[in-house]
Length: 253
Image 1 (tube, helix red, strand yellow):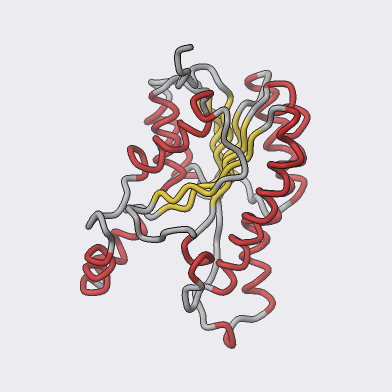
Image 2 (spheres, helix red, strand yellow):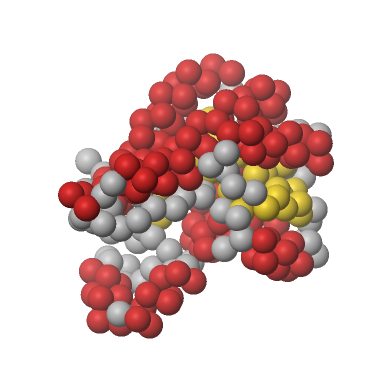
């Protein structure tokens, strides 16, 4: 039996799709002919993404705040209205503050959870009946910060590990209905990282030097290609897994 890597005409939602890893994945999916709904608070970034990717496929955009539960339902409803189905839900968006644990306040934790964990669970729940119809897949995002306990990342790491726990449980609950839930834990050379590299080239060089592959991932070709794999039938026997797309930086045991 031939391996099916095809995502052409699949309906895909990507939160945080206007830049960084989200835009890298959007580019990878667009070039393979998937229909995209990109969601972000960055309206200018969304317009640019739509302009750049519409030559490949049908690209719709939503400029809204996923921290609002009603907005999360609107995202799913929009995808169904535009494309008539939902095959892939990618929960990528996240905002957090980097502070030592003792310096974090309630607002810091609320920001992290309200832009990642809560939208992830809302979108999964709203998407469920549609993913059941298509035997679709969910791709959530983990982080090495949570896996190793990186200092100054307590709010971010807590939300990311909560997403991992949720994803593993739901993967088990939904497996019998043909819905798969997997996670990517990436390291990527995003625009934000490039700005940080200019501001602190010494620390950036140390980060690259400590990576076994001596480079950071490309959002489209490295992270996007793994997302394509998870969205396709080529990964049909995988669920509840965390894929480390980080050049070997972290080894799960």
